[in-house]
Image 1: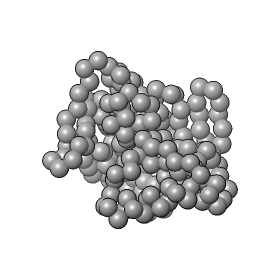
Image 2 (image 1 turned 180 degrees about the vertical axis):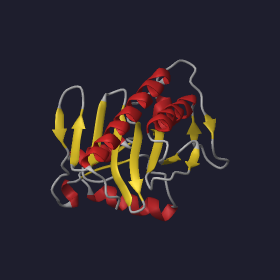
Image 3 (image 1 turned 90 degrees about the vertical axis):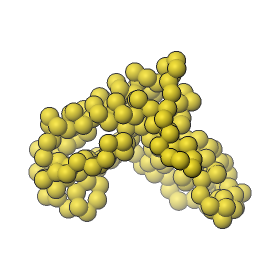
Length: 210
């Protein structure tokens, strides 16, 4: 793991916050806009990308070029940029593009900084709701328009008392689908179409499984 000073950790947190802010502006510019369309990145299934995905990542890359030019970048839409610092920024400018296209605010911007051992700090930002879930470097909290709260997962409980969320049940193989339905029958409550926001809800202690 990278040996970072307190000042270096604070700088990385500040850079992540700036990335989230520029991504908020870029994504909200097009969210629920009339005539928003998407290109399909795949041949055999629908994997959409919009102008907002591309703009959001481009704006974040501009910040990194200015503030952290020595760091690498792994982006969902624009690929990999090599760095020399041993740190890499992992960017998903819109996780949940289908929800973004549908106008439902369960998509989010995903940002993390990692070294060769894995993630050091990361956040999920939901621009439309204005909630940000962050963790790493001794921090774990949700900051939103209504409150600031520490993140804490739920205590373990039987499946019969658990809340399960997933994006859509048809993902995976037929065998995966059968196994998922067995799990659904054992859980107290199941909700669909939640995207990355579901992982934020796990971290905040509102649900149990994704």
